[in-house]
Each structure stands twice: as structure tokens, then as C-alpha cells.
Amino acid sequence: MKTVVKILVGVIVAIALGIGGFKLMQKIEHDYMVEVVKSEEVREIIEERLISYDTRALTEEGAIRSYSIDSSSIRRNPMGGISFTVHVNNDSGLYVFYTINKDSNTKKIVLEGGGNSSRFENLITKDTRE
Image (cartoon, rainbow, N blue to C red; front, side, top):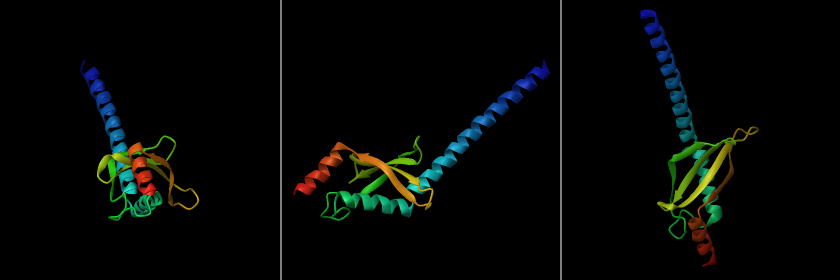
């Protein structure tokens, strides 16, 4: 009976260690993605893209006055890279989402795709009509 209990405890400990190791690896990967998304290189990509929508972006005269990266939206994209959302003007309804990846030749981070909310689209098209 004691050997059965020892084997059972051993199996449970092995499973717990496996699950714990898996969770730890997920956390390490997520922390790395957060570090990449909050890097200077990605900040430049975001600001460059926002300025392409509104030439007066990130100034008092522009429709886009500020932005913040939604840390809870940072995820590994199944097609490769990292996906995340940027909220504009501290409004969760005004957002742009991006997918970034590392270029295999230059090793630089590049924008691979994204989109925006309809409210954001209305904001920038209204501003360009004026």
C-alpha cells in the first residue's frame, strides 16, 4: 500500500512540476513581448503610423493628441509576431491594433499589419475634411 501511495505522490508531483514549468514559460514569453512592445523601436513605429493618419498627430492641433499601449492586449499572433492594441486620446473606443514582427534579414522590428476602430476612422476622416 505504501508503494502505491509513493508512486501516486510521485506522479502528482511530476504533473505539478510540468504545469508549473509550462506556466512559467508562458509568463517569460509574455514579459518578453511586453518588453518588445514598449521598446523605443516600437514607439517610433507607432508614432510614425499615427502621424501618417494625421499629420498634426500628437500635438494640440491634431485629432490624435495622445496614445497608450494596452498591456492586456499584447499577445503572440498565431501567424507570427506580436499583436497589440493602442488606445488613442485615452478613449477605449478609439483604438488601432498592430501586428509587429522581426525582419529575418535586417533583424529590425517591422509593422506587418493592423487596423482600427470605426470611431477612430471617423475621427481621422472628419479631421482631414476640415
